[in-house]
Image (cartoon, rainbow, N blue to C red; front, side, top):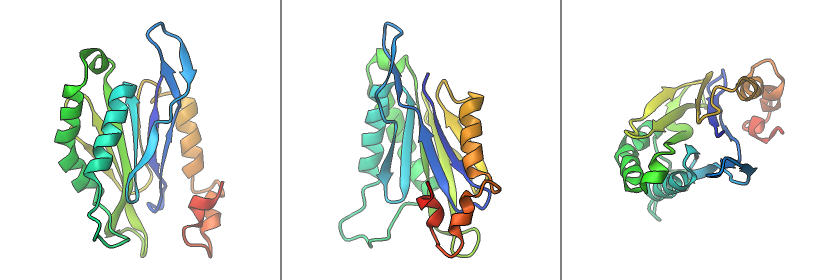
Length: 189
């Protein structure tokens, strides 16, 4: 079983990506050995499910695609929806170029990050979750808070969904860390 979940909270100011670390081998055995969520660009996180081979190829591809020029401002970043639309054909090509046995395992990818200029509440960027699925990799884009998108064979496991929902629930106390400490929620652990 494999899964990753991208979610944003009710205030629309934060996003999170959570994934498992399990791989399944040809003989059906499993091991918890592979990280599946990584930073892929300024303020953007990517995660994969399905074929590990294709997943890492997609991570490499999007990281290269999102690389900013050396003279870009230090706070420069991509608009997630534009990045998703422009990278989708590249992702499809990565999938099509993979060995047939890897394509048979399918591949899904999440991209989560804030819009660099679009504000929800004053001073808070609107978060986006972009989902890509083989074979087309046509992006499914969700904008704003209180959203969650999951990928992989474990995407509908209630235990995983509840854990992310609880972490982003406005009543759980995590958001209290934000008071008087802009950005503090991300530091609360």
